[in-house]
Length: 274
Ligand code: SF4
Image (tube, rainbow, N blue to C red; front, top):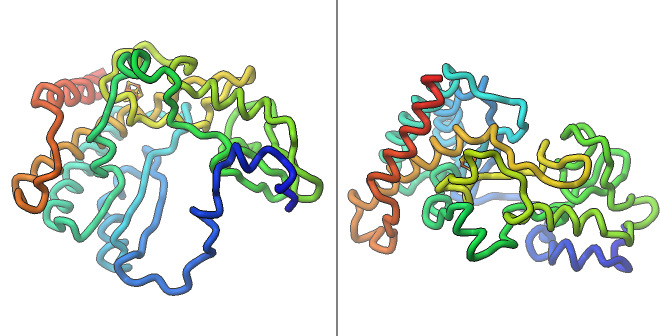
């Protein structure tokens, strides 16, 4: 692959440090991990999957999130199922203490949540998305700024390839730069409900179905319920863990209030009542 003579490496960042060490052949038992994605029709299997991966396969680092596609919507029944699964997951995680990690309960997603309004005032160029940081290679040899931009992963008509492995990478990075700019909070198009959302900064806005044909981005909202439920139970988890092990977790700061929790729960339940 001829990447060297292009500007792309500067935009992509130093990937080799993160990904350049190849695949480890023997994982020590305590570093086994996996990542998967759930859709509304698989909410009912979350707890069973976590238990299987942890108890039968010995995995301790489990990362999962919800599909980002905008047309994959939760029905009220699926949302109720999700709440029940997270309730069970919360109990299981308390039992396991620090023996098991799951990404929806990661402390970082609840420790520094910032509303959109605050971001606009303090950090208007803030963005969660970094087109180009995870370049993807398609089967036909084309290189894309993200696997979500490989044709077939979204509904975009425009193709944003950065070149091919057979020729060279595209020197013209205009589209990539524009995408990164449009992912910033001051340019991102958002729904009315996201404008006043208190957990905006931790909510994903992935390129899947977010990129419009004019290369503007619209914030995904299909992840809304999953994200709210995850934040609600992650907060509950850390509150309990801190209470159970005060000395061990003395550095954990509970920054949210009971009102914050109640407001979030009200929003979640409203979606079921619709
Ligand atoms: S999708 Fe929902 S949780 Fe995410 S920012 Fe918008 S309102 Fe908040």
